[in-house]
Length: 390
Image 1 (cartoon, rainbow, N blue to C red):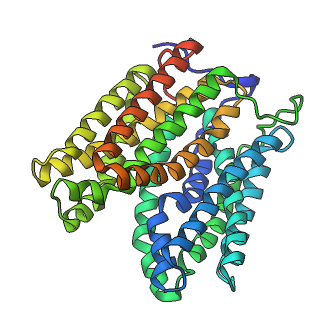
Image 2 (cartoon, rainbow, N blue to C red; image 1 turned 135 degrees about the horizontal axis):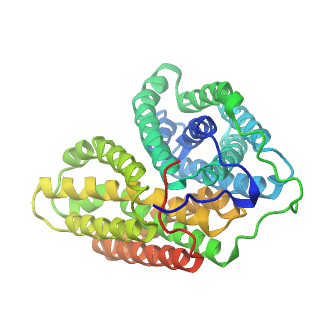
């Protein structure tokens, strides 16, 4: 077993308390993305927004997160990370709360931009902390498990809150949760500040840029399949009821994959873990395309989500180690957010023009190319070897 990854820039490794505290904040900030179906349903069910308008609102949220990431990266050398977390949470709370009192769609879009920027700042600051973990793969694996749990809770709670207070239910819930996150402030890493670094930090290096491009491609592929899983299932004869039931249980393999990744991250190299994830994804995509019965389709769906949740922690570990400045780790949520936004758009066009099989083929190609880029960046760095426990 080799030595642990050394913290970049001479800073101390993040403590367990700091990782838990920032992970809780990150899981909350990520709900706007992970609970999108519940939020869109709340926007459209009241009859105030048609699907097109709801789509614009969601797109602004995602665009705001990218802007928030860039804002954090441009100021992270001037502010302690605790200050960035405070600013991000404050903007999240204000934006979500104002969204509950908006008189028109343009005003709602403006408030969603504020909330999105806040979420982007908070997520980027959290990922910067995760890059400081002695084992980034384990830290993000446990974060993925936490995000799945909070997503499941949101899917259960948001419809109930929506029935109680109307379409503003999800935004009201997010503002309350944002306020509660300030209770974790005593454990935020206040000491992580670079006093003698340049004020602007938007450079990633060759390996870092490759990792960000790979992240975008990977999430584009996964989101493209995930957004149209109903259409993919219908193409092989599965009923909508069965697909919905299968989707209700995918949290189980997702949590299992993230916990498994946290355990094996001390024993397996990043390239090997990424290649295993690729093989599992390709096998899952194959199972989703064959008409061999409901159980086979359900197995493919579960395996697809298992591979997704089990692969991302090692992708982040590769990104964190490729760039010791921490810029790539901070930009990771922007890259995955852009992929999540672009995936359904690209896949939807392919689906309409060429059918579901082309969506699967495109996902397989993008996933394979993405993993190849990650492995190349890992080999180029020569710094990863084997991860050790935090």
